Image: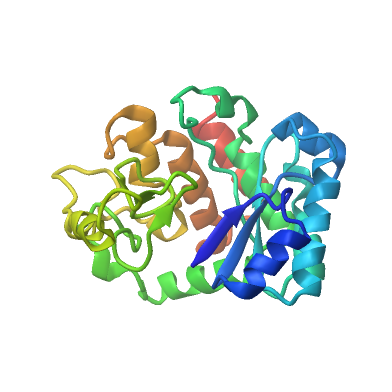
Length: 271
């Protein structure tokens, strides 16, 4: 079992529960490096202090957890500091994302915080976060190695409906955190719900699907389920996701400089 949380509500009582029922991993989102950033982005007063309290308790109790940066206009320049916090408290790899999608009420409110694609990629490059992994991926592509090629032709290139499920506090269970199709483990048999999710890993990409055969796919984090929630259709691709993947590809595979990336972006995407 993995636990997804922002860490602000973790207290000694929760530590006792985690000791009794140890999760495989606690996955914690980090939204900033100050109380001011937390309050602006989440509405939680003293949110950063509460977050630090939570991860300090987990560290002291030797409970496994990882941090994931949620990058937005107000905090993306703190990416390196977020990684430093992760390294100081956790031995797990730091992850981050600047992909924002519509919220559960299907409003576009999160979009007002989106980082410009070029700024996001340049920040990632400047701070060297996950650089070794991305350079390795670029080198493999130049050598014709694609570990995910076995999923070519499929709509989902991830492990949806295969390795794990997501259960929220209401007992609603889906094949991943993003999927809107759910059963309820408080009302239905767990195995019967899982059986309904088998279809996802077998779903073929439709003819003309833009992502099929895309050269940038190894650097892409676009998710069909988030697109379904946003556009009502899994195959409608968000342009920003494509731009981010393309810029990363040009840098890590073809070794364009930051200045060359800026020129390319200005020429092709800034009208």
